[in-house]
Length: 168
Image (cartoon, rainbow, N blue to C red; front, side, top):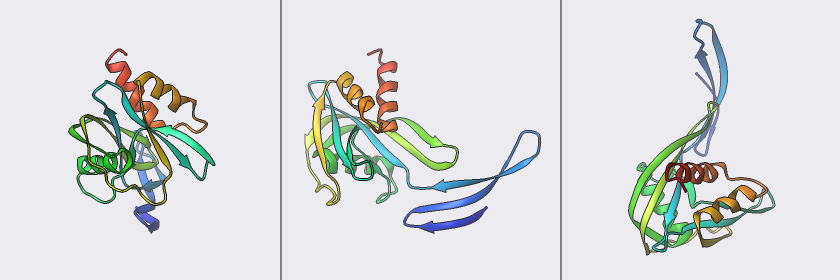
């Protein structure tokens, strides 16, 4: 493995990979911190979703409360922090539901959590974010996410999988 670039929690590497027939190829891969995404259920059975402005897209997108696991080593602690920063709520019950990956060339995981028993316990939002918190039925939340000009794929996958697994 050869490191091509390394800065601010991101690394670009050139890494060998073996094929089943014994041949080897070299692949450029990117390492970055994992992310936590939270399906946060309210007492009414709705979920909390964000409508967040993304400056490089020049528009708002819909997404689950989400963020990088870069301040803590414990993924569940990071998920709880992100939930508090982005929605103002803490979850009494927070369980990892599933894990997804971007692609073979990106070394990072998306950890999807289910949050229940929400109670007010806000942390300050990051100064460089512009977002609104909405409480919506899960079907409406998914439609908003899928209809965004730029779809937040981890949020779409999380809700689609949850709805399939729970036959919603």
